[in-house]
Image (cartoon, rainbow, N blue to C red):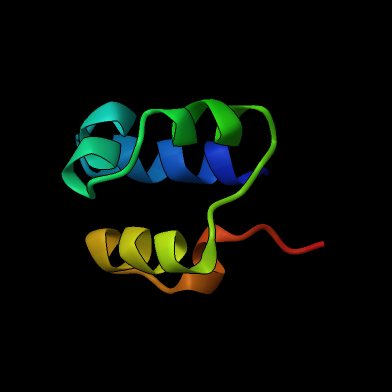
Amino acid sequence: MNFWETFTNLCSKNGESATAVIESLGLSKGNAQRWKNGGGPTLATAVKIAEHFGCKVDDLVPTR
């Protein structure tokens, strides 16, 4: 599973849209497009997302 799939799964489990979470964290909508294309967040962004969902950063980043 890539980051985008993990992120959208967390959004769904919490009843939030990906766009709403991205906007609430003050991130650019361009992040969503980059993540959809296989990119991942910066460490600072991953920390914000993990704090938002109450999970660990490691839970967001797929292991290889």
